[in-house]
Amino acid sequence: MPETRATILVVDDEPDLRLALRALLRRAAFGVEEAQDGRAGLRAVHDLRPDVVLLDVEMPEMDGWAALERIRELDDALPVIMLTAHGLEMEKVRGLRAGADDYLVKPFGNQELLARIDLVLGRRPERPPERYADANVEVDFARRAVRAHGEEIELTSLEFRLLTAFVRQADTVVAHDELVRSAWSASAGVGPDQVRSAVRHLRRRLGWKDGGPVQSVRGVGYRYLSGA
Image 1 (cartoon, rainbow, N blue to C red):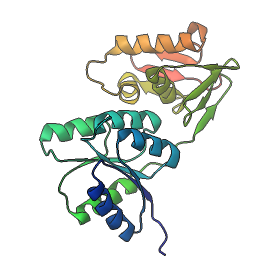
Image 2: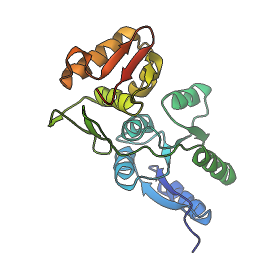
Image 3: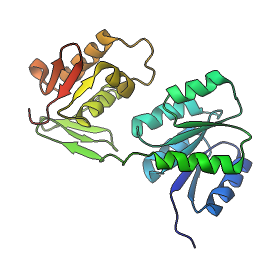
């Protein structure tokens, strides 16, 4: 048996397509996991930690757009290739802006799919650590759990993404627009006032008085101080 190159998660409600993709990917020495809808796909992303997700757009219960948003909350670096029957340019733009790494229109060629998978694997960043801890806060990214002052703190999805953006770039300045890309699933219309309000709520939720470790950098953004 050849060594498995990477694990591909196929999320699609069409059994025949899953069967065809399973055969194709295994011939190309990929490991294959499957999910029949968006909710099952999310569980598989959390439990199996695949290397690439092939995500259908049109599915019952939870469609590909909703699943993509939730996947990005779980793992903002996991490569996702959207699969759809619609080739409209605006659909492709929507997918890429929502955080997809690539977009394929059905029916697609086998070799094109394999080439797209190789492409996203080649530019995949090193997987970030699953935990972060300093004197201010402890973050378990996989469990989405946060502790501060010795207590577990319940954050909203937006607050958690904002905190993640800060601690993963600790001690460096994070610009307003970069925070928007990292923390808001739909960035249109998010301005500096909304960013300031979200940061203020995060500080309050974590009990960081007078700003705590999150410093405002006038006219630029914020800096999270890991040693504060």
